[in-house]
Image 1 (cartoon, rainbow, N blue to C red):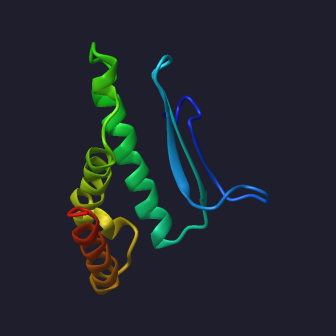
Image 2 (image 1 turned 180 degrees about the horizontal axis):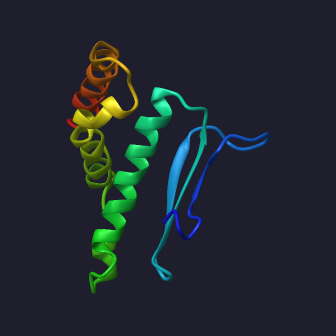
Image 3 (image 1 turned 135 degrees about the vertical axis):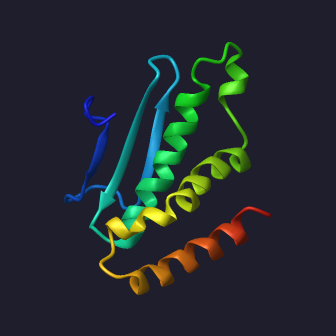
Length: 117
């Protein structure tokens, strides 16, 4: 995706806040757009949207088109799983283990609240 220029992460005037991914079924292309400001939330958002992109790439070769579109619960399961699975590697973004504790706890709490709903 990066080699194809399908990440638009830089913050700029007039760009919408937040982040999202945009899969195109016919061309099998995914774009991730976000208004990043180098915060922890930006890192988690990029991981989350990357989870959606991975999910799309894994189902893109399915023959039945309806199988390529999933319920919000299934979509969030993929994206939130990436957040949780990558936690042990967040040290790349933090200087000290103690700095990771709060963000990890926050991500766990959000996941536990969202999944059952």
